[in-house]
Each structure stands twice: as structure tokens, then as C-alpha cells.
Image (cartoon, rainbow, N blue to C red; front, side):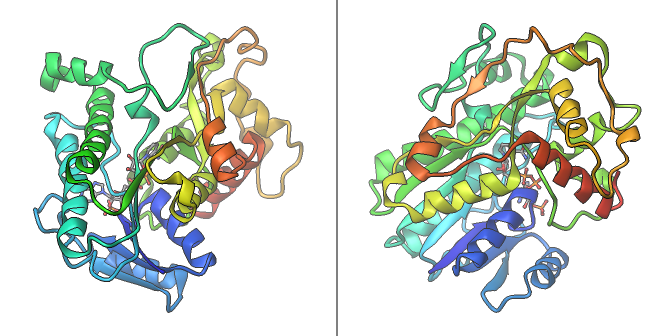
Length: 338
Ligand code: NDP
């Protein structure tokens, strides 16, 4: 089967393409530039990987050519950063990109089997009491309210989260109103860590989640005191989220479902401890790995995003924090970004 992967040059999407190719799928990736296409061609060096240029995902017919002849679509392209001034800078590409993919499919290739969309726990998370367990049934109504109220003055992260809420909503609403013969699956990952395989021209251009992780492992960015022990977020390894995308594509029962795809909560202390617990690792200088404030997370009560549904229905397992951190740090070293 031929699968279209949008935003193939991204951190997550490159792994998604790789898993698809390993599984014997043919992959057509959309990219914004020839340069990114060439990087991917040499990364995969497979006759089963091809690309198509889609320079502007917001253009109304942007995906018309891309969807021709494919059997399924994995839509991952969407801006992930907190730098937007106008909320529309992130909401525009997220929403119009998603709508555009669905409309092109409906117009050009409506007998396709399935569309999988990368959403985020950003479209789920809400202010809560510590220890809350979130499932797929929650929708983030908080960030859209903040953005509606504060506009350009809203925190950048709420602009991003709103872009993910609106994009995912547009997709589910499209299915409801158009009643297409294909079905929809959405995947909601938390902060994604893990090794890089995509092209990154300079450390300043690292994808957002890897940049955040890297920063916390530098001498200047290392967290100390009580800060180290607080919940910093929820995480998952990029290889596992990629696998969830592919299982969501392959398994019949996934149709119409939303899946949280998370390994667990984290504090910086947990991340640091997980690396030190590995003992000696070839290629890693443990002296340079921050220690935080050991014990600072002892009483932390974590919010949890439950992946029970993905584990039970898709049969995926999420790898351990130590393994993921080791591979992430080694990868950053390989890229020259440690
Ligand atoms: P990247 O920034 O590495 O990838 C984003 C991809 O989207 C790239 O291919 C990028 O193209 C493309 N893209 C971004 N903005 C635009 C735009 N305006 N027009 C066209 N293409 C665009 O980030 P990730 O791999 O982390 O993100 C992939 C998906 O995963 C996104 O949907 C993101 O919201 C979601 N996600 C990510 C999480 C994380 O922690 N990393 C957590 C939860 C969800 P180009 O390479 O040309 O810049």
C-alpha cells in the first residue's frame, strides 16, 4: 500500500516514514523544499520512498496532487512552537492544513481507507488538581478560552495548544458532516523525546521538544532545587509514537478512535536519575549529566495521561525513560548538539 505522510521532514514524521518502510509500505512524503527531500532520499535510500513538494499547506488545493493514488494518509505537518505573536500564525497552518488534506482526499481520492492525524495531548490537557488521570474523553477548552480572551497577549503555548484543539476538531467535524467512506484516527502524544534521524541544519533549528530536552541537560539549563522535582510534563519516545501511528493505520479497530500515546509523566529529576541509573554508558560523559537535587521529586504527585487504550487496542508498549534518554543524548552527540 502507498501511504502519504505530510511534513515528512519533521522529527516525528521521519521516524513514521522509517517504520512504514520497514513494514513494507510505500511512502510518499510531502516536504517544503527540495533540500529536505534530498536529505530524506539519502536517509532512506529506498525505491519505496518518494516525495512531493507542498510548499504551503494553507493553500486551498495544496494536497490535490499529493493524495492522488494513495491508500492512506498520515497527516503530521503542523507548526510546533510557542513563538507566535498572532494566534493565527499557528492556528492557520494547523487548521487549514488539516482541512486541506481532508478536502483534497474527498475531492480527488475519496475511496482511500483511512486518515491518521497527529494531534497532541495539547488538545486534551486542562488545568487540574495534581494526580488527575486524563483519558481520550477530555477536550482542552481552557487554551481556546485564553486565546479568545487575550489574543496576541495570550501565552505562546496556549496559541499552540489552541491550534491543535482546533485542527483536531475540524477533522472530527469533517467526518461528521461529510460522512466519508474513509475513517479517521487521531493520535495524542505528549512531549516527544528520543533519537533524531531528520535533517537539522543547526542547533537553533532543533525541533521544539528535542530543544527543550537538550536545554535541560546543559550546564546552564539544568534544573536544581525544588524546580527539578516538579512535574515538567508527560513524555514519550519518538520511535514508540511512530509505531502507534503505523498500528493506527494498520489495525481495523482503530477507525474512529482517538489515542493518547504517552509513556508517563516526568520531572527533570526523574530524567536525570534515569540516566545516572544506567551506570557507565559508552559515549556519554556521566560527569556532565546534571544531577538535579536528588530526592526533590519524592513527594511529587503527577498528572497522568493514560495510554491504556493504545496499549490494549493497538498492542503497543512504551520504552523506558532510561533507554530513551540514553538514545536521545547519544543522538544529540552524534549530531554535534550536546
Ligand atoms: P517538527 O517541527 O520537527 O515537525 C513539524 C513538521 O510540520 C515539519 O515537517 C514541518 O516542515 C511541518 N510544518 C510546520 N509548520 C508548517 C507550515 N506552516 N507549513 C507547512 N509545513 C509545516 O515537529 P514534530 O515532529 O515534533 O511535530 C510533528 C507533529 O507532532 C506536529 O503535528 C506536532 O503538533 C505534533 N506533536 C509533537 C509533539 C512533540 O513533542 N514533538 C508533541 C505532540 C504533538 P519543515 O520540516 O519544512 O519545517
